[in-house]
Length: 117
Image (cartoon, rainbow, N blue to C red; front, side, top):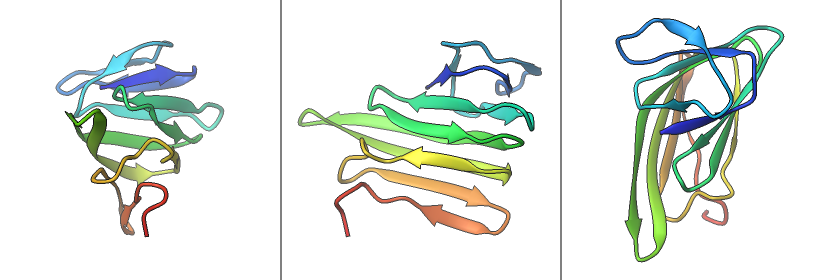
């Protein structure tokens, strides 16, 4: 699940239609988020505090959102599909063993946890 922080975007839940995003909305896996050229949205993923900043004029789909607790650490597996625009990711809370992938029309980017070579 992703929690919305910010205003000005819209979301489409799996099988649903587009609606205006509100602060504190929760989005399940399979949801899409769009921003206008005048807006941006911040998503907080899981309870792990991984933050995704959806930049203006962007669209992102939350393709995979999975997590498990392992000896007190939260291990996550995230895949975003970004057909247009940009996102910024704060990977400070990505723990060893976690996976984060962004797919774009140009290719795939994997973001490692901080401190891992």
